[in-house]
Image 1 (cartoon, rainbow, N blue to C red):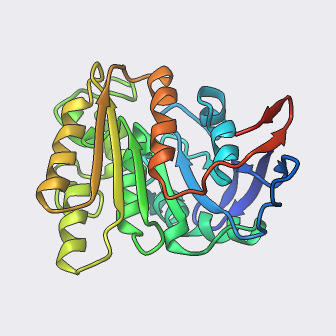
Image 2 (image 1 turned 45 degrees about the horizontal axis):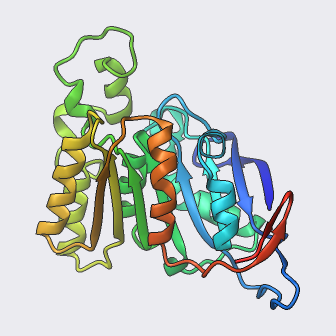
Length: 278
């Protein structure tokens, strides 16, 4: 398994950004097994949560081993505390970055499939919101959305709050990300509005895998959004299980989410320190 750190100048952000990439290029087949086909990799673009960076998913979960099992490439960019939205005044166009530019650049760097049906977006908390919002806004690029414990209504949570300097409750921070907080609903930052717009346009809606822990304060928001998708006939899988808003829960649920993606069947192979016989 190749675990790579890449740095490149992003036009959407006008600065050099860092991403971590899992690339299963070194799978040695077990004796008697066929060699892997040299086809472009299916790819999951995986977004971190608030306070995080490009190392979070590898540090906090088994994504590296599970991606190797499934012959899946995974791209994990740093998104700062941006909520993966566009902020043109500061050249922080993270929506355009993860929606389009990141795909284009990484496909030129690596042997990744450029087919929509092979391209997925996911994330947790802030990154769950980012995956949902940008997976819908850029639906022509992504066929499936995986979202863990998504922060689906952050602008409402802090709308009546104080400017207290703590990022999770500070109104000024929320305004710096979303603009006028009373105008988010119905805009292209509102997942509910995006779903409604895509259906009105008869767009090919991505499929959803959503999950949230039963001890997570964001559970009600995730249940509400999953119910909205179901009521509108959108293909959604929503699962809850014991867990809070923390890495143990995301580690436990990640493998189930990967099983939901249309990936290659596991094959026997040899890897560093580990001989897989199945």
